[in-house]
Image (cartoon, rainbow, N blue to C red; front, side, top):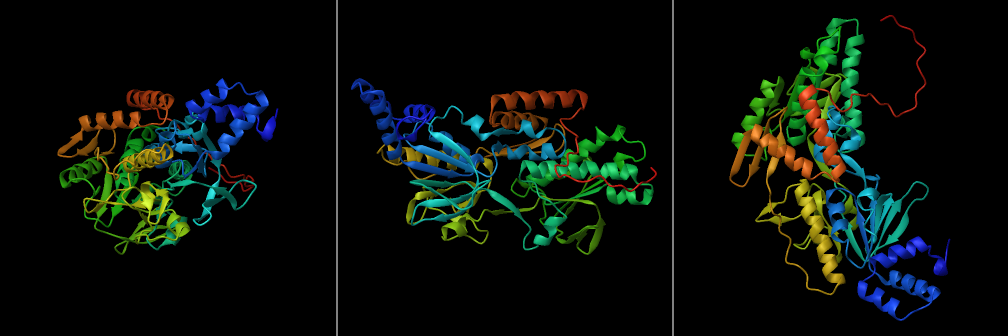
Length: 474
């Protein structure tokens, strides 16, 4: 039912819950009529500053949560309706977890934050002069959304280093859809090999190539090796899954180049013990339907996965401001865009030097920057002095390499093995978005550790296809 000002009672309750307590008390004491109260609330709501956050990843969600008690209208816009814990995407791709165990609806996370609205849409541009963004929704294009403050937390996508033609044959891993597609691709390769009459073709079908030996590539390679050696080895009759070849390629001289050399070497040794073929110092020349060419050598494969470079969103182009060669926006030490103190850029989209070194594109940087941007806006809205310049506190880096083994680097602390793996488990459980996810993932990991049974090995094709009418003998 609608009342004065075309505001529903639910909308007015939300506005009431988000308004400053002092003003609400004043309105209540004066004993206004219901209609006057409704009009006053609606008028007050319109005067609240509007904060628009683009992106529901680590940085965007942290910014929204930091604004929970701010007298402002917060709008969070994302292309998907969920927040995904990206560090565990590889576990969905390798069947250890289900998509629902590492993602949660944004509306569910922010359901108790009455000053925040979640919109499903894709931002396509920004007008700095008019202070508005443009977004496409399911039924509208170029919808303008005004802001008083803007936080861009748009993340990254795959970068093929000028070889975009590789994308057709080598998908990357950045979203839940990517993870499910890669899971399908891996499982289909084994199914196709099982059905293949010609044994000479089994080798190509069971060769999996990963391009890029950073954290994603290393963790994915290790998880694939464990999948093959444990779950799949006893489930096929016409092929031997243990004959599968997993190849990890990188043009760098070390795996996990951001870690200390001793930890990098420990991770490489662990991969090799798992049966992963590690080829370093070699660049990929070509990727096509028949596999990859590396340093002039053809590796025949039907399953190639890109785990190498990333590229920021087009936020720099939208803003028309200075960026680095990779497209990251150069921000000031308060994370704002030069000459636009109302616009913040956080996470992978931002370039900020600290002690002469660019901050890395990791989740902890995005989370800390998102919280900082939210805090700065809160201080401005309340008329308080701004906090000091942003400074990243490095809590360390971790990477897991197969079952029960991880490496950890935090300051002078360096560790590898089972103790580091237990620390990795605890940290990743803690940073999942909801308690329900923590419980679900912990139980699944424990169950898999004891029984070897995995989260989901379903091949799910979301496209609608007509069944083929070609007969064949198998």
